[in-house]
Length: 283
Image (cartoon, rainbow, N blue to C red; front, top):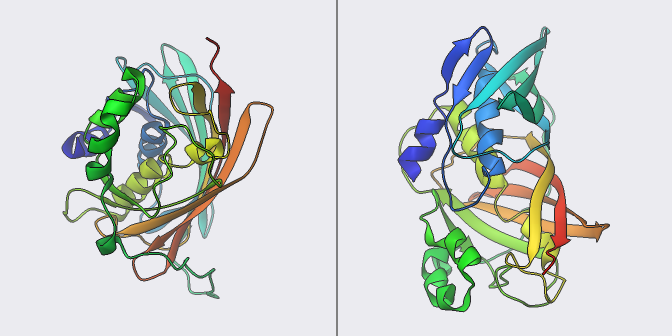
């Protein structure tokens, strides 16, 4: 799964400012949103001057993607200024736009520096991997939920607490999870940023169903609507990173979640916001 993820981040040129990408099957009916997000970042990077790095993106998931069909990434060069470059990416499948992203890239500059402190949580060495935890709950899950966690994720996760959106229960809408990429190898900054965007779509919207006692992945339709992300500092995707997520509100079948990602030394590397559909499934 790790090598497959790195492979699909290598897009193929399909014309002027047009790129073709394949899909990674992760046990879901539709394409995982984080995959399209990560590939869109790579497509935009193909057109950006050297030494400019992504610092923010704003995106909308318009239609579900079919994992059996290729994706086409159409890049619009909006502007290259003295310090910033702006790009828009339209992702198409079957001649329909399924995803749009606007992203901004910035040259490296010196400036003021401050950040929120990382939460005081247990070190990942003290925690149990989700790989071990899922073995104990597989027999308790319906087949649809089981398919989601039977696969080997490209990232290793270590939850700080054991609240689990796969099982019924009423919890505070807060999650803290350590994660890291499974394969240790030297990766470019743009690939690491794309991988960070990919994994940022895990464990985010699921936080919005935690306060609702009967809501689980099995009986709730969960789908991302939009995704915003800010890249604050360079990231080492091969080392442990903490995802600190909370869901301040849910209303009208939409859940809202936000979070920050910190590295093992306490540096804040990214901030994320997302709203998504959390509609109770009809029986």
